[in-house]
Length: 213
Image 1 (spheres, rainbow, N blue to C red):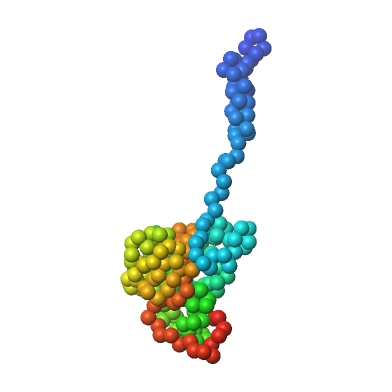
Image 2: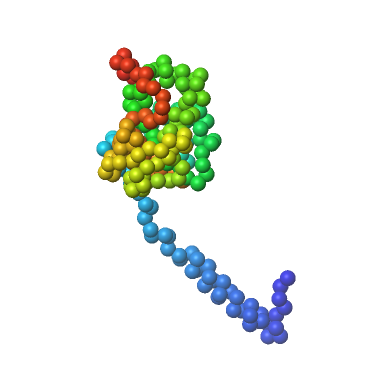
């Protein structure tokens, strides 16, 4: 409803002040500069990192830092076997909600551990054995490689306590595996690529098995 004019044809004083004040507020909002802070680049360390996507390449560390863990694993070219096993087992549905650290064996690590027939059997018929194997590579909480090293041990989701020794970024886990590219980030997650498979399952690979799984 419009406000009646005064006897001299002008609006009341409080309404005459409104337009300049509103204009000032709009001008201030429209002239606010963009946030000048640069986007932080996610840093990874280790001897394998140089062979993995960097810069603007698909799967680069900064891009992965904004992805949920299952999506981040799909973008990592050396973790196709591990990612397929995680997806086939459904183990991600059981993960803690307060963060996760993934000790992810490379494709070469799986090829050195399991024969193709044995691995296919685990993936298709024995997910009851596959799930504990994967949990042997998962730790509750988001832990940088330096944090794991300072702690000296880590307890995996299968209940095993493993030792963490060495010098970052190449850290030795359970005296069996070394980190080869550490400190990838995903949403509420740290991912460390390792060069050997942990867990209790026996080695079944042989000299005739040369292909990565």
